[in-house]
Image (tube, rainbow, N blue to C red):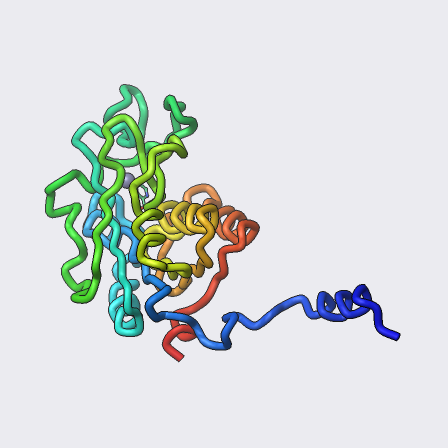
Length: 233
Ligand code: VGL
Ligand code: ZN
């Protein structure tokens, strides 16, 4: 005879389930494409360039055609922002410091509100995008995540927006894989969203091994790593 225990063991002996629960990716009403920080500041020629950051633009434009819901984010700092090395006498970009909410990597001045540097990349074509979330606008606090600021308390409102619209699954793309994409993805999991990062639609800063560390952390939190071909078919 078969006991439930035996059945359970047989089922759990298959370590990998299908990539998508229903066999194909859900890009319909209950899903959203999140396009993180594809701004002039983060592509070559910008103030905090991510290597080959501009290469994500055509991939994201193509993905956009598959989604009913698209949300865009913009890093949107005050002049003299706390995340800028220039705001901390004696500090240089890419060093770290301790702020009230914890360790902060110090960056070159970047993505200052209203500047051309902070504008979305001119070749990004997302005519159906429904929401632009700006973040990092409090002078004393950074916000890599599109969901909450670095104190892990102040919400941007994106979680509530997505939930009120019945969205359950998010697909995250953009810049940079190891900072704003990773923090956004991990917070999406924390808020209960099924979360995919579309790897080839991201590029990384990779500061002292930060890219490998970010994938490790994302994976441990249940973020799924996929490619644009998995969505586009
Ligand atoms: C980002 C560093 C500083 C990002 C934003 O978009 O990944 N990285 N500000
Ligand atoms: Zn920033």
